[in-house]
Length: 239
Ligand code: PXP
Image 1 (tube, helix red, strand yellow):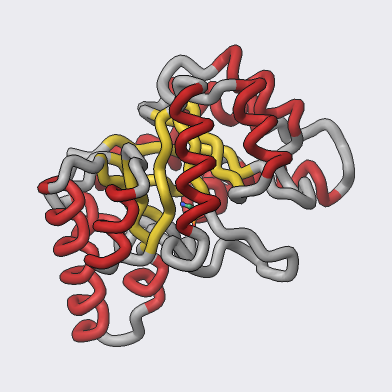
Image 2 (cartoon, protein in one colour; image 1 turned 60 degrees about the horizontal axis):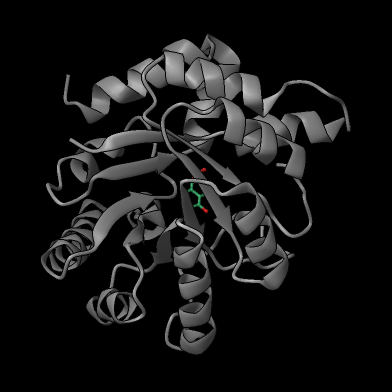
């Protein structure tokens, strides 16, 4: 069964809408852990549109499970990661104009730069994951570049409009996960997962972490974080 890692960015989105001090993603993270989350994820974007450096620093002190910093492969963020030392860094592509992370990293196009960053983060004692499209060639290249893990992008699966398309995307994810595990990579998955579509991805045996943000925080606005996280954890465990 994969572990549920909760992304608390959108608690910060609500806070930043008013440039206020609440709701606090740090408090949300603590409540999420108390409800069964086995990891906390935060994406500090270059434009700081939601999570702030302050959030990351306090989370480093209070998170008791695993703290995963999503970040763009740029010098400023590499410096931040070296200073704060999250347990895990997930390198993601970042475009200023996008609403959310749209695709996986261009691992081939950025191989040299990614290789250097992976090396720096590894030397700082941080586990490094690459957020990638579920393709065999990209999984292999991630391993060549010495990443510890890959996070498979489930966005196309989540956005599929027919059952056939969804099955096809699920197969792509399952095949990429199997290859990743076979060649020694840890395998996570995420993006666009919600209460209706999470089950089949959670049942892929090689997937050991699911990173889920928007659907959980959206539900938490209505029912509270405890219930929203506990319901998702139950679905992942097949209960
Ligand atoms: N994984 C990665 C790499 C992401 O960038 C995001 C979005 O921040 C997620 C998972 C979570 O996606 P969602 O908010 O759609 O659950």
